[in-house]
Each structure stands twice: as C-alpha cells, then as structure tokens.
Image 1 (cartoon, rainbow, N blue to C red):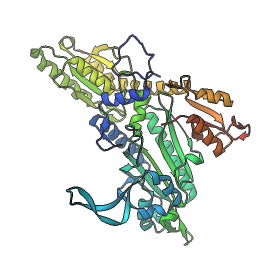
Image 2 (cartoon, rainbow, N blue to C red; image 1 turned 180 degrees about the vertical axis):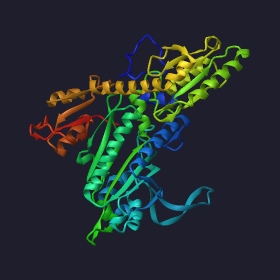
Image 3 (cartoon, helix red, strand yellow; image 1 turned 30 degrees about the horizontal axis):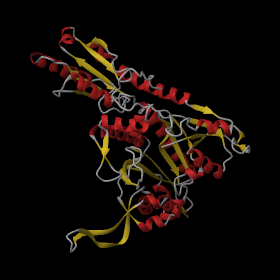
Image 4 (cartoon, rainbow, N blue to C red; image 1 turned 60 degrees about the horizontal axis):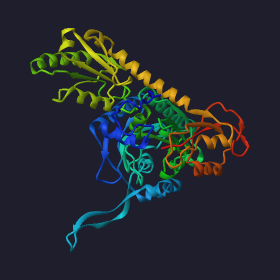
Length: 510
C-alpha cells in the first residue's frame, strides 16, 4: 500500500510505521494538528484541521441519510437510570462504561472546598447511546401503522468511560451520529439495517478511499440487546481491523422495553420493530492509519478540509504583490471548478513563514495538492504541482491555465489511487487459512518482546462455538470481525474439525 521505506531518507515523522506503529500514529496526530489530549483524562481537544475532516464526514454522510428519507433531531444528554433498567441485556452491556450524575449544585464546605450539595431523586446517566431515551419519545409519537416508518438520526456526543484512551479511536467522550428507526414489520426493519450497512460501506469506500469487509457480528460481539449486529471492518497499515460502522436490528426488544406500540392494519395493538446504527469520529483515526505515511497524514480529496493549497514563493519583497495577486487569481479560478459535485476547497497560505516550513506543514497535514508560484513561474505563466499520494520530493510544472483545467481530474486520480493502494494492501494481507497451526502462526509475532507488524485478515472456518471464539481471543487477542453475508462455502472448523457453514473473518482489532 505505502511506498517502501528508504532507510537512508529522513522522514518528517519519528518513529516510522515499521518501528513503532502506535507511537507513529500519535506523532502524526500531533504533526498534522488533528487533536490533542485534554486536561480531562480520557477526553480530547479536536483542533480545526481534525474537526474540518469530521465536518466533511458529517456533511457528506448527512446528505446520504437525507436522500434515503432520514431526518435529524436531537435528544437529551441525560438519561434516567430507570430507563436503562427496562432492557436488562442493554444495561449489563454498558454498565461498566457509564458516567452517572448523582447531585446538583455545588457549595463551599467548612474547609473552603467545593462539594456537591443536592442529591438527585434519580441518578442520570450521561448517554453512552440513546436507544432508551429516544424510545421514550417514540412511544408517544407512534400510535398507528400510519405513523411508520419513523426514520430519525442525531449528531451528538456520547460518554463511555475509557480506561485506555487513544485519540480518535477510544476516548471517554466522542462525537458520532446515531440513527434510530421504527418499522411496521420485521422485514422492513431488517431491510433498514442492511440499507444503512450498504450506505456506510459505500461512504467509507468512495469518500474515505478505504475498502471494507461487511457482514454480521457473532453473538458475543453483538450490540447489547440487539437481535443482529451488522458491521463494516477496515484494515489499517499495521494489519489490524477497525470496526468502522455498525447497524443493529433490534427486533422488538427495545420496543417492548420502551412501550413503542401501534395499532396495526387489523386494528390490533402490536409492538414495533426498531433499528439503530452509527459511525463516529473514529473514522478520522481510520483514514489516518489507512493512508498515512512516514511524512504524516495523507488525505483523500473528497474528505480533505483543503484540497489544494497555494504557496506563494516570494523571496524578495518587491515581487510579493505580483505573486500574491497571481495566487489569489488562481484560487478564484479554482473555486469555480467542481470535484465530486462540490466546489473545490482552495487555500492561499499567506503566512510570513519560510517556503520550506510552510511546505512541510502542509505535507504533514496531508493536503492532496500543493501549488508553488514564484517569480520565475510568473514569467512563464506556470506553477509547480506536488501530489500527496506521490513521494514528497516529486514535483511537476505546468501552465496555470492547464492546471485550472485539469485540477478536478488530478483530485480524482489521487482519490482513486489511494483506494487502489488500500485495496491492494488488504488483498496482500488477507489469507485463507485451513489449519489451526497456520492460524496460530499467522497471528503470532516472531519477536514477542517487541512485536513486529504481523498477521492481517484470516478467512477461516469456525463451528459457531462461543467457547472456541473465547479461546482464540484469550490465546491470540484475535476476534471474529464479521461473518460474511450471502454465499456460503461449507467446510470444516479448523479448530475442532466439526462442520462449518462458511468462512468467517478473523483479525486483531482496535
């Protein structure tokens, strides 16, 4: 996927991916100014460049939701504890992650310290997910089959107490969207869950340039309280999996817990069928680890906050006005061009900094195209072009008019190139495995003291046993990522020799 590492070449990020992938990830976040740890343990501050990526995820995904009939609403951050108690499996699944508010008001004690003053009559859980609080509203809104389907999404923050935080991947508070829908029949609800799974797969592939495997989670990996959980799984450059989005068919479990009933077409009362689904700002971490290199972030053009940055090169003050005017004129022309049905996002870097410093800052931020215009370029009515999907020292010259004409094509080429790289990397590191010994060898590092990048995705037969699943998780920290939908390939479980209906996808995961 990435260009081979040249040990003689100094890189902008230290350590390199092959030296210490987790630390490389943290250093890219810092160098690209995506986010930083907050003074509140487990939480993060998302900086403008990182939030700009998330805003593009929001805008682009939201348009896809609206095109399929969904609308946005907003529900409370606080959920009464009694709401969770209505769905036993759900509360058990989230109990250890919940943050709970028990008091209001602060007062100063005799020692001059602030302390909570007034206990609440009922503790409030800060939402880890909103099925229960949204269900309370839906129980009021849904009275008849004529009120269905109810297709609602919200963009929100949630809190899940995290002991081992990692920026974007696992933080105590994080940003996401959560869709919650209500349907008249089981078939309609199952179709909704699959519709959203396909939408997520298309978005991550076409916008983030990350190919994914999709399918069903095993029972042990299912969302608490769900009948079926569907998921998309991406492979990143340390060959681990990231769960990039989930869609849950909840059956009638949450409808019963929340009292979501309607009068059906025969005039009888019936519990509704519901779904929930979501993706989070974890997608920012996913694209970083899928595309980043040893010089920093590499952004697909469709998701980049700035697609083209123009760097004026004015070493002499007398040439600066002419160069700035040319850069501004170029930006104006480019903003009249479209890529993926949206105007190009173009920025002129006007800061009073050295050209090399500015150039490397934008390299580390992953901006898809960098343009340099200096006095000599003006004389020839030309500019210098650098693409972030190519080695950082690779440059090309072309006329200003030609670049304006082909800029959307260049962005499309970068988008497709990143997708093909990621797809090729995944294919190279995905293996069909037909024996237990080969499976264990595939997922065992050669250097146990300092494990090297190893493993990948394994397609292997499994007999459906939860005990076997737990054994593999304990032995290797490997889990079933998805059970592929569709065609089956009967065989024998590689761990027990018992019959297996199909291969499932195993991997180590974040």
